[in-house]
Image (cartoon, rainbow, N blue to C red; front, side):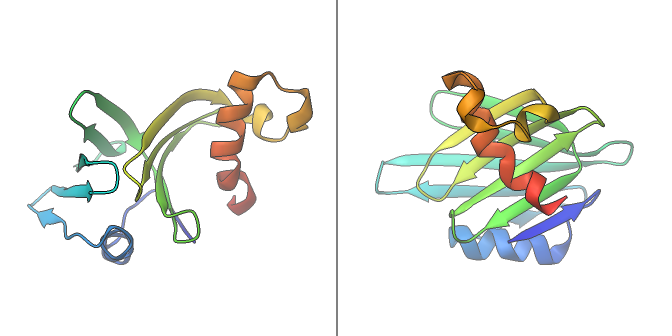
Length: 141
């Protein structure tokens, strides 16, 4: 598992390519990858666009959705979970855009970081989903 703060390096790009068995198309200020999952017959297109002022803009497209995470400052690549989490955070809040090798994607936005440190048995089901999904970022910070 890898966490990078305030940058996405070539090493991170390579880890993402390895995880998804696909290669990024690179331009001067962006990376694009098409992630295919024959298991669920889905395609996920991810664009990483560098913004010199605020990290990366992550833009994700599927057949029926468009998700965007601005000010992405770090990523987690988990081979065990077979997913990448793109993270945008402030001192009090965190947002995570999760892309799974299985063809799933999820966005948890503006989650209070206190929720990640709460006893999960005290959370309602909706907050529990975001807490579990993003708790991996707390263990690394």
